[in-house]
Amino acid sequence: MAVPRSGLGQNAALTRALVKAGAFAPQLLDQAVARRVEPNVRHLGASMAATCRATLWTEVLGLLHRWHLHRLHPDAIVYGIAANACRKGASWLGALQVMDDMEAAYLQRDLVTMNTSLRAMVDAAKWRQALQLLKHMVNSMRVDVVSFTEGIAACGAVARWQQAMSLLVLADEQMVAHDSHSYNSAIAACDGASCWTIALLLADDMRRRQVQQNLVSMNSCISAASNAAAWPVVAALFQKLPDMLIRPDDITYGSVINAFQKAARWQMALHFMALWQGRGSARWTQARMNMSNSLRHQ
Image (cartoon, rainbow, N blue to C red; front, side, top):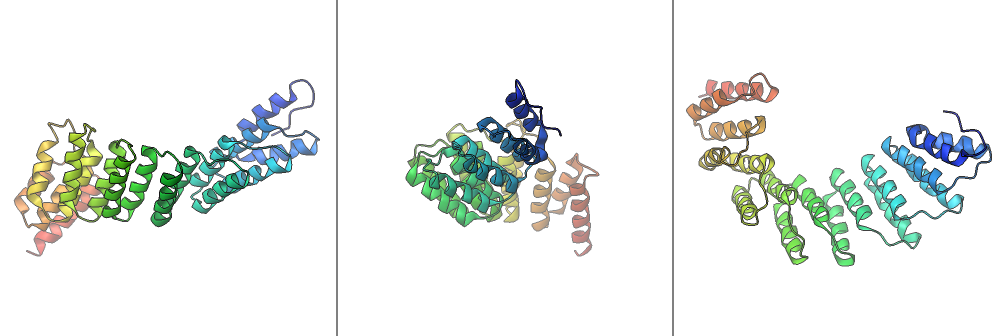
């Protein structure tokens, strides 16, 4: 991609070119500097945004360093772009470095950048580090439901349902209203630990607080009960779905059938296999094979 010729509107043309350059934005910027074009705030911002979209987090951090080389001062938005690039690139350590750089630049860490860094830790399955960062955030700023949802999701990924419940309580203490995402993450933590009784309590709390339950909520509850072989609970939850205007999917049927198989309720398992509309799907095929193997060993 060629560098726009010097003259009237050169800066604006270069900015537009950088926005469209994607992964080649750093090289285009280098070409401009070689032609003695002094980069400005718009040039560097456009380069970082384009490189972030290309998920090249190391290049984004390199561009962040160039602000200081050109005696420019990045603001919180720029640091947020850098943190987001690290998240997309699965570099939670890079996101931490961005926050450290903000502090070194005497900039107050903003909630968006902190939440982005928190998400990077969740995506990297660094649940301990995520909870540590969330604790720091609670003590230093006004957090929001996104912050708590990310923390709860970190607990859910490793089935730490006790910590997930503690975060729900802490959110209440901080006057942060729960949404379906935070509840679903907590229920998922219970699912991973087969704590179906706690999952149902959370589902009841959603109804009490008028937080809409969806397929994700119900699938996690059904899965938690299924893992514990609590087939009557699974059947009762499944029967509620039509009244909730929730259509079961492959995950739902797989969990229901699994519950009846564990309890050796073969007629019910076969009944739900017949109801399953996902015939031919990978999950349906696997469920049929599992049932055939189980029946063969009876």
